[in-house]
Length: 257
Image (cartoon, rainbow, N blue to C red; front, side, top):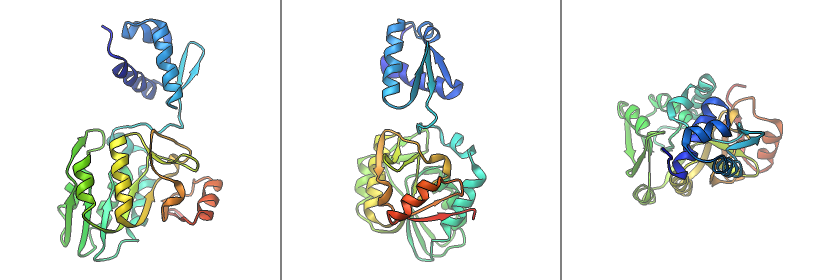
């Protein structure tokens, strides 16, 4: 039975992520639509940056930042993310008011805050809030809104309205894609909008990203690359990125140096 266009294209993206490539004939049979329809789907995905068309099919564009489940993200470069998280926590002082964005690297920051005193931590991530709730001498605030199942995060107008009532010392911002031209991006429009509000209410914006995020682009802009105050990453950052960001006034911190 044929499925509607949006759902079919989402399933094609899933196949690309799992298999790396797809064939027109196979997709036509699988979804019960014509090869012309499938070629239109692949053309659309190529225009969006998800796929690279090839003879008889398409390949996954490895430079595109997809909306993958948090559990999958957490398994990628886990040791590197832990070092980045530990370094990030060193910028937190007793008594600070923080925002911890959702994400696999920001999740790893949480345990490093256990010994800090009198922190106020706002988060849009249910998993982060659950861990922080067990710490003493910490006030944990959770944004309300709609839940994204892939990331255990909350977003929406209610979350944005709540956030605008406060001011914070530091935002630790998760990153899906980080490109010098396209900026800092994420696949989900609602979360991108919430992230922009987070940036507005924080005195200092610290992006945490392992080097696999560089050169990747996604649908929704959060912030231009030069509009953050500090980037904490690892030593695999390309030299041209490091130089360009320093020239833009961004403090680039290498966690494993």
